[in-house]
Length: 289
Image (cartoon, rainbow, N blue to C red; front, side):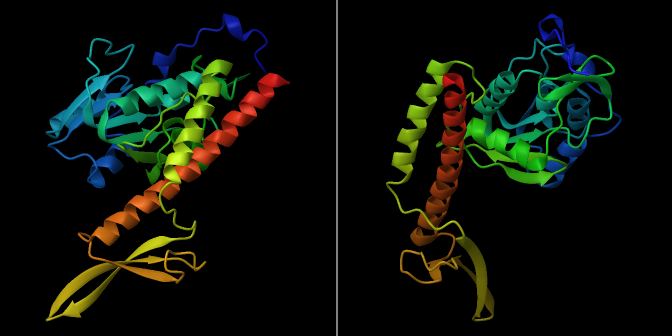
């Protein structure tokens, strides 16, 4: 059944918060991967009942939790690691999901961890609403595929999202980030976003952009009985700066290696920027029809 009068619907988002007896899978994976360490400050943005925060504090982590319903008095201060777990799946308004992502990223000093519900909803209440469903408890639930969540994060923040585990992605703090509310219905705002993306692309193209298939490989050789590690840039398309398949970069401290990392970052940022621009153009075209 599709909701016929959505304007009269009130979503009790706080009812989506679960009671936990152990760390959630995304938090456990974040700790296991060494992304969240005991000396890091941590903010669980949209922490619900705060079980993850309590478990982490008991383990010696410097963790705090903010939730607009359960912990509204927590001051949203910047933290080394910010987690945004399952929150995006409970928000029924697409533009508001972008706003929450932007807000959480703005508080992130090092790493933002984002997760969402995957697969089909098992709590379907029989009502289709926007791009999700109303559950049997009256809450909203949006299930994401891996690529859908990755694109939402990247298209909103403008920086690469790397898969961790359990439909959880990590985003590093990046000075090139250009957060945008891509689901906005404000034509003037979207036109401004389009202009910003055009400018960003021109700036990124000022430097060398590696081919799409280029990767950096780590190698080693034995010198005087010790391992010597070095890096190579590799491409099958022979489109490297020297027209060859590989380019020797030297050690991790070398200028050549650092320049290659920056070039790869420009390539990834440009790819995301181009996709964002296509998406915004499609929305603006739809407004003109």
